[in-house]
Length: 379
Image (tube, rainbow, N blue to C red; front, side, top):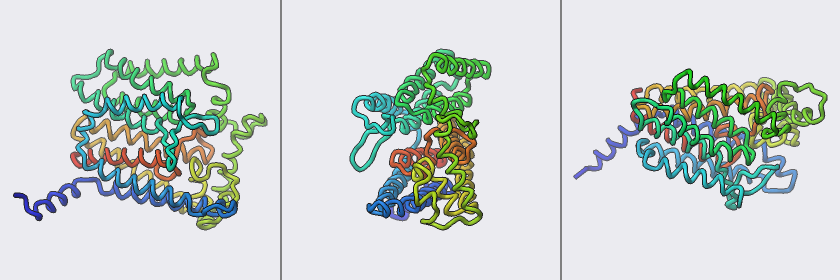
């Protein structure tokens, strides 16, 4: 019969093996995000006569739920994902199809299921499902990937990618391509074949532009940051929010205007300052000190994800952690870069900081998977 002391000892061993720096880093980042969402939305809500604590309460609930999900997932052996990977993938594809039938539209895009208290964006979950699917598939082929295997994985990624593009959600498409590409390289796709796939992808993108599959406004959205002083009205409108974001961050100076202060934040000069442009609120209100803290914390989390991937005990753990590393790191880089005018405005949320239930749950669940890998990694 197992005594209480034995149970506590086992729990202590489990806790010792988990990557506590990564877990604590993700918790701190999420709570900091709740604070910044509240700081960016309190005054505008007051000005409009609404509950000033609305977004604080909502994002707080999302983050707390996400932390619970992260802990629960971290306690599950990641090898068990192999059993449910196909079910996850199929459910993700069906959800993407369902968005076109019963999904909610907003700002010209149809990407969400509205469940009353939360909007679920299936494309964000699909990135994680693809990570699990590729890691599982590669794990089953220890002898290496054949051309047949690579073709199947190409279709595995291409089918949901096409549906996500049609929503349209170019930001998630970019993330999905980069995540899948990095995982395929590590999974053992020969360099020559990978180069051929890159060239094929580039030619496919050129063809999409030439025949109008990629619409002009979408192309302008992706390239407008390269010509921010253009006199073209369409381009000028696209970079309007970027210019205001850069001005707000610059106005923050060293220490910022202080929490709950700042003209761009409180008066709404920067659109979507609680979601895509939450980093602008950090820059204006907390200045260089706040932005440096944010960047360093995200870099630290990215480092821990990479370290766990490098020291994973098997290929499945390595690929899972690598996929999450690319997912998290590129999302952070792209989001921060777009607020500073060095990356396109692609609608990618800032991990664990942008307002939104789907993104919070996905990133915390992804963190839980990597923490599960860390329990068995050679660190």
